[in-house]
Length: 605
Image (cartoon, one colour):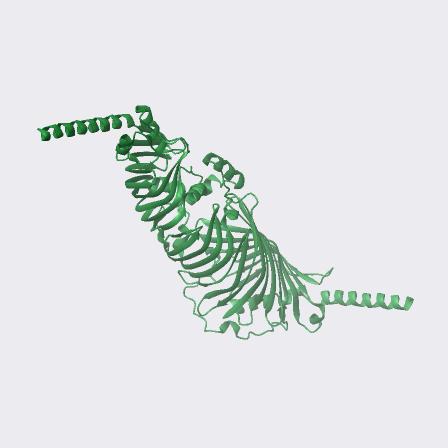
């Protein structure tokens, strides 16, 4: 046992002595220029290392460097700069005069993807195809260079897309291992904070760089994320994803396959493609069995508009005022102005503001901010909808235009989805053209115009029984007739049609006609969406439910009685002049009877 221990101690002393001797015999600055030259020969980038390189023996044989930067040709600022760089090297290759780097570690690095860090060599000659793979002499002062692992810790990425649009990706921790066949595995974690919104990311991926730079691919096996903050549901948005991506240099194209992404209760699959030209062109095809958009937006149902505002505030944090002002100034969709795109989305079941939508089919194209919605169709209950249209985000305010076609959609569900009083419910159908500025409910209430033909079946005018109003008014004026004893808090309409004109939130209804077994009416009026008020002038003819004097009933069944319905949707008022009409009808009947008697006496003489 003592001999074994003695042998191990001697072996350890020899190793330590050998490493110490190696450190003293080999100066890391001997291959400093080689590393700088090789980086520039292979990529054109300039590697700058401030100060001397020095050895660090324990616990890992390493070379330490001070301030380090990597700058693109002609760039004003470095692409990568780090306060410290560490090269972990293998011991045995050093004995044969080879520098084999197990790991390069950058700590507190700053990565800049900004206009100032981009290459700027307008007069530089273009290298021939494949020049990036030409063999470069591996020796400089007898050294050879190889890297197996890259580590980036606690670093920052600055991504500037426009002059005033900068995104900072913080807390970057990257671990990358590569094999001799130019295969690499990557684990990345980071955090993005912007406009009081926080996004955390974790990515595991495999890279294939065998044909780099002509072609390379990535297989992202796991992407997990969590988004919290302003205008995000209180519980946040989180999910996982995976995809396969490939880049082709000759066409400057990124192709996405086997795309899978979840967001709370939503799961999307599909494929895509991006052509990264001066004007990027994107194509995306997505499918989903189930989508719950309320889980992402934080929408919650409520019994009234005020309650809805309170519940919405509890579900979603408000965005900062500055962020809201910027979004309003850029009309919310101004990001569409910088690229072309095609989007196809098909979903079996969708939940939006409590509405259950089936077989959703969306087909849209974008050309530099001019969007064509060639198809937006789906089913709601027993009804269908089609909402083709256009959006234009190239102006200061978003301009929209739609040609809706609704068939047998339950109007009560739509009113409930937008927290509006259900003054009128039933099976709603419409054809028309509508448009204006903005997409919010407030925009519709103030900035939209259009024309439409509307109809309803099995409709209820809630809170107002027109038939019984008329019958009670007549009964008060004459004891010869009375109406039905059973009282209902709604008017039941079998069929109703009208044509409408929408102007800045006020809907004018013309040629209004309604039919039911016991009542018909016609008329016109206005509905103000912003103030949630109505003013309707109707001529009502009650044809059933009368009891009493048959001649008078026969007269009433042919008489149109004026009725004005006005006021807030939640509490409608009415004006009814039944007694005046009744007196006129009785006077007319009396004059007719008297004239008939005179005519008959004259004829007998």
